Image (cartoon, rainbow, N blue to C red; front, side):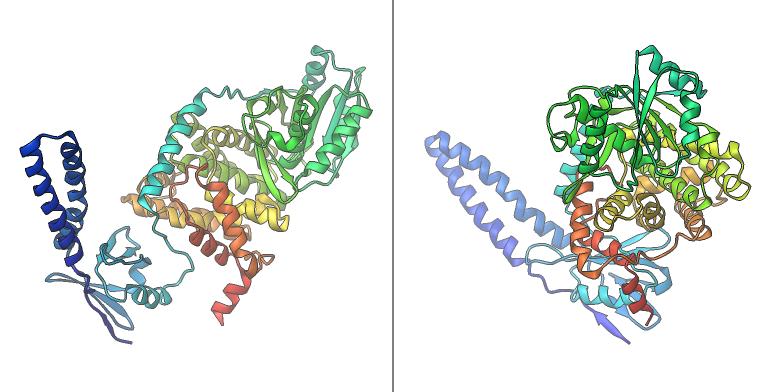
Length: 546
C-alpha cells in the first residue's frame, strides 16, 4: 500500500468576502453616525464591529495554520510540515482521530503518539480515509474522540460548581465500632426494642445470635438474594418491618444489602413513594437508626450517602446525608469465610472507587489524600490477603474500601462506573467484577489527559512501581500494574452477555449517567462509549481475530 494524502482545497474566499461586506457596511454606518449622531447608528456600529471578528478569525486561521500532508506506506507513515519531514512507524502510534470539515473551518486530523506527543493536521484531503487506513494497522480497539469545546466548557463549569457546593452539603461519615458488643450498646442507648436485620442469604445465623446474646433486644431477619436491589424488594421489606413492629435496622452484607437497608430507611420515615427521592438531596427525614456490617471490601456503602436501587426500567441513586449509616463495624467473624474470587472482585471495586475519585477533576485535597491512602492500602495488602489468607491484610482491605468510600462520596466516580452500571442494569451483572474488567481500558485513554497523567505518575512513584523519569512513562507503569493485576486474577475477559444490538442503548445509558454529573478526566462522547462497549464485546473480538 502506498498513498499520498494532499492538502485539501478549502477556499479562503467565503470568510474574506464576508469580511469585506461587513467592513463596507461598517464604513457606511460609521459615515451615517458621523453625519447624524443617531443612537441606532452607534448600536449597529458596535454589532458590526463584533461581527468583523468572526471572518477575521477564519482568515487568520487559514493563513497561519501550516498544511501537513501524509504519505502512507505499508510499514510507516510520513508527515510533511512545510519543509520538514517526520517519519513514524505504526508501532509509534497510540491512536488517530479525524473530525468533520466544512467550507469555513478546517478538518482536524490528529495523530496521538505513544510517547505522549500529538501531531495536529488541518486542511487534509481525505482525512477520514487516512484515519481508517492507519487505524486498521494499530493493535488495539479503543480511541480518543474529540469533544466539542463549548460543550466541554459548560460541563467543566458545572463540575467546578458541584465541587464547590458539595463542601456544604453536610456529609458526616459514620463512626466505626471497634467491638461487636458495641452494636447492641448503641441500640440500647436509643431505646430500641426490635431490630430489622437485612442480610445476605449465606450468612450463618449464629453470628446474629452472637450480636444479640445476653440482651433484651429482639430481631426479625429479612433474607433475600439481591445482587441489584429493586423498588419492589424495598417495599416488601417495608411491609415486614411494619408487621413486626421494628424500630431500627441492621445491615449485614455487601453493598447491595446495605443499599437496600438505606432505601428501606428512606421508605419508612418519608411519606412519598421511593422513586420521588431518586436524585440529590431529596430525602427530608433521616432513616431509623442504621448500623452496617460490611462483609465485602467493595462498595464502601457503609460510609457513603448513596443507595442504588432499580426502579422498573431504570437504575437510580438516592443520594443524601440523611441515609448514611450511624455506625459501622468490621470484624473478622464476618469476613473469614470470604472466598478468593469474591475478595478480588470486591477489592477491584474499591480500587476503582479510589482511582476514579483521585483522577476526577473535582478539587478537594482532603479527599484526594483519602483516595491515595486507599490505593496504597490495597497495593500493600492485596497479595497477602489472597495468597496467604492473612486476616490482618483482609481487615486492611476493608479499611481501604471504607476510605475509598469516603473519597468517592465527595469526589464521585467516573467512566468505569458509567460503563459498569449500564452493564449491571441491562444484564444484572455483578458491578464489582465488571469494574475490574473495565478499569485498565479506561485508564489507557486517560494517559492523554495532562492532569490524569500527572496523577497516575504520582501514584506510580508513591507505590514505588516505576523507575522512569517522565510523567508519561510513570503513568504508563501505573496502568501496566493495574493491567497485570487484572490478568493475574483472570479478570482480563470479554463480557459474553453483551449483544451487538444493545450497544447503542448501553452507550446512551452510560453517557446519561456520566455527563455532566461525573468529573471525568476525559469527556466521552456517545460514540466513544459505544467503542468501549465494543472492546468488551466477545463476538466483536472473535471476529477481529478471524
